[in-house]
Length: 80
Image (tube, rainbow, N blue to C red; front, top):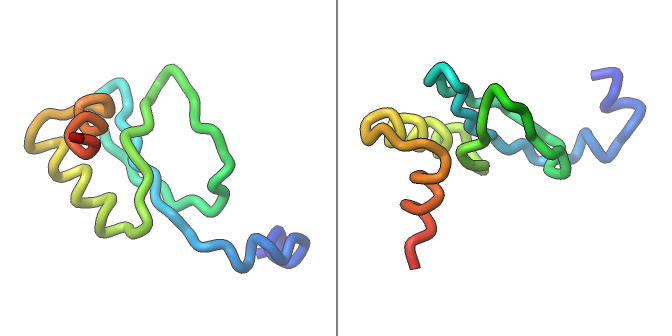
């Protein structure tokens, strides 16, 4: 809350959700406000970004059911 008071732009930002796949097979959904943040770590990969938590949950459910990683998810949703 203190950061929002210092930076009024943060108070107006719309949240988005990031789906992560960790190296141990766990999925996590994080709520994020900064759309300029670059996610990068050797312990996880970013599967995708979503405008709603419900969409992020659907992604995790589909990935678990079909045993998809981030690259396979990207190929699935970006079929041309």
